[in-house]
Each structure stands twice: as structure tokens, then as C-alpha cells.
Amino acid sequence: MRLIRFIGYGVIVVLLATGMPLSAQLDSSMFVYPFIVLDSNRIQNDSIALKPFYSKLAQLKKSGKGKVSIVHIGDSHIQADVFSGELRQHFQKDFGNAGRGLVFPYRVAKTTEPASIRSSTNATWQARRNAIPNLPLPIGVSGITIETADTAAEIKLMVKDQSGLDYSFSRITLFYQKSDENMDFSICDSLYREIAYISSNKDSLNEFSSMIKLDRSCKQIIIKSCPRNSSQTCARIYGILLENDSSGILYNM
Image (cartoon, rainbow, N blue to C red; front, side, top):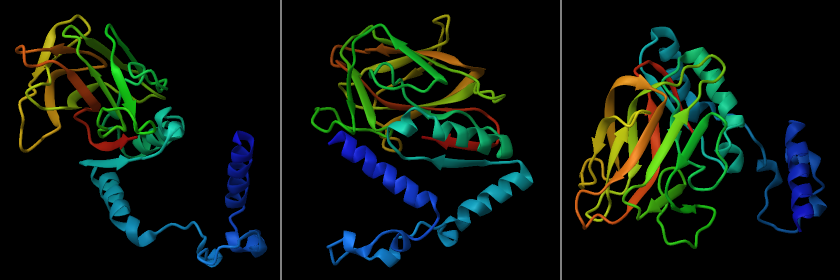
């Protein structure tokens, strides 16, 4: 079954690579379903839908001011940041580097981690990916969720520069669960000096996130669970957004 599935994907890739309409490449006798309209099987650039995006890029290129955010949604090939990483670098070299964008401590979740990120932990975390729907944790913005009951849990997160692009960050947005049961978080530098504190008190404006501005740029942080009282029994994280103070492209995958 795996071999057949793989071959099927390969056939589709070859057909799309030719640039010809599928209706011209496939024998209609292969299909017996009346609802398949082969003449509509085309991949094309929707210039109308993308016009606002192109306008924002042009304005950014001309003025050198502002940020344009891109969200690239995909599967394992996006999580590993191979294809998306190349796109990020080309966009940021042409239009400016506004930061590394949305990241996740994938290694803590025991799944594939991009080479440009390094994460580790001293605790055991439960993890759920959107590809595994039967686990009890909810899914957040990254498609992955981690949770621990360890009151001394730490996550070390470091980003690496790529192809001449400096990925130091001065703004951190933590996506996490805000509730009476969820722990607060202490954000520390590599020397364990606290540089920010994030409360889990509910905020009607930002129900699942908090943004903090750092006094100085850095490439490594330590996120520590920090229970304020005995009712805070778990720490749940959905993702981390890393930005700098520069104009340019923020490419999130």
C-alpha cells in the first residue's frame, strides 16, 4: 500500500511538472466518476486574489518600512523548514528580515525540528500533533501542543542565523493556554536571568497569547514554568513568535 501510494504521488508530480492541463495528459477512460471535470484541473496563479499581497510587497520594497506577514501551511516538508526555509531566505534578502517568525520546540514534542532551531527540556511533556487526532490535548496555532505538570519544567530555545540573515529577536509572542489552572511563565536569558514574566490570567483581547518586548536582542531564551499558586497545575504551549525591530518579511510556517 505504501509503495502504491508513493508511486501515485510521483505520477501526480510528473504530470504537474509538464505544465500541461491534466485533461491533456490523462486518458478520460481512467475516470469513471461523472463529477470530475478534467477541463477545470489546472494550477494557475490567481492574480486577482494575490493583488493585495503584491501591492504590499511593492510598497515595502519602495519605502523600506513596515512588515508583511506570510503564513505557509503544510505538512512534514514544511515542519522541517526545507522548502519554506529557502523561500524565507529569498523573501527576506529581497524585502528585509523582520524575524524568524512562528516557531515551536519540536524536539520537546519528539518530532522533526528544523536545523535552524534547537530546543531541549529538563521535563517530560505530553505532546499532540494535528496528524494524531485522538490525544486529549487541544490543537493551537502551530498544529502541535505540549503540556506538562512539572512545576520546574524548562524549555531552552535557540535560533541560528541562516545564509547571512541575523535571526536575533527582541519581541516574543507566546501562544499558550490562559486559565486558572495554567502556570505562569518566566522568560530567562541563557544565564538564567529573568528578562520577562508572562501571566496566565485571562485577557479578553488576547485569549491565547501574550507579547513581550525585550530590552535587548538575543538568540536564545529559557521558558520556565512558574506556578503562582497551588491551583496552577499544568503548563500548555501552542507556539512562539519571534520578531525583531526591523522592517521586512515575517515568514511563518
